[in-house]
Structure formats: C-alpha cells, structure tokens
Image 1 (tube, rainbow, N blue to C red):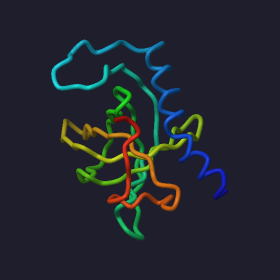
Image 2: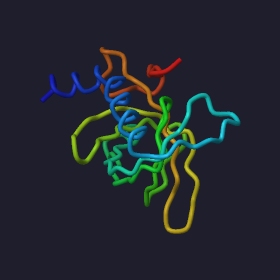
Image 3: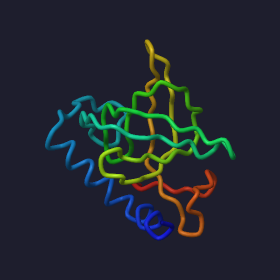
Image 4: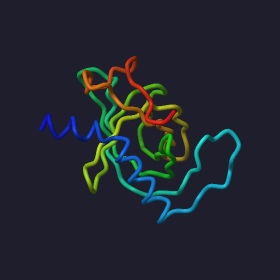
Length: 138
C-alpha cells in the first residue's frame, strides 16, 4: 500500500498531464486570458478531497470538477475548506491521486467553489507538510 501511494505521488505530474489531455479532448477551452498562466478546459469528474492540514481529524468530502489547467483544478464542493490548506485529490473512477494547495474557497448557492493549485511532495514527506510542498509547474 505504501509503495503504491509513493508511486502515485511520484507520478503526480504524469497524472495531471493525463487529466489535462482528457479535458482538452472532451471539454471546451476557456478563452479568458486575463491573469491566467495556462489555458483552462471544462472537465466534469468526481473526486474525494482529503484535507491534510486538519490534524488527526482529517476532513474528507466529495467534489465535482469544474475545470482544469496545467496549474490547478476548479472544484465544486459542499464544505468550506480553508485557503492555503493542503489537500489530496483522489479521482473516484481511477484512484489516481495528486496533491494541491487551496488558493480560494468562495461560497455559492448551496456549494463552495474551490481553486486548487497542483503541488508535489518531496520524497521524504509523503504527507505533504505545507511548508515543504513544491509546485508541479513553474
């Protein structure tokens, strides 16, 4: 189990690229270019979000993606997540896992829209201490 988890963390960039390719094939590109570094594509998938910053009482919730880019993913969830929280995103269908840092959590009617920036953990820290996490994309 531990080896499988390390492999999933180590292959995070490959997983993100696979998801982005899928979104490019099935979704629509957002043409807004304002302050975005990467193009976004609509993408509707189901995930489990595990908040890793909550100590022993970890928070888990289900999410549906709204869009994805090389830098992160937009989610729709039913629970507030603190900005800067480190999360594990687990794809419901494939079990693929990546990590991210919450950049915003905006309340909407009956849900929250959450922006998550993809990050990867250093090999010595599979639980992703927030201070040691690095980004996938420069």
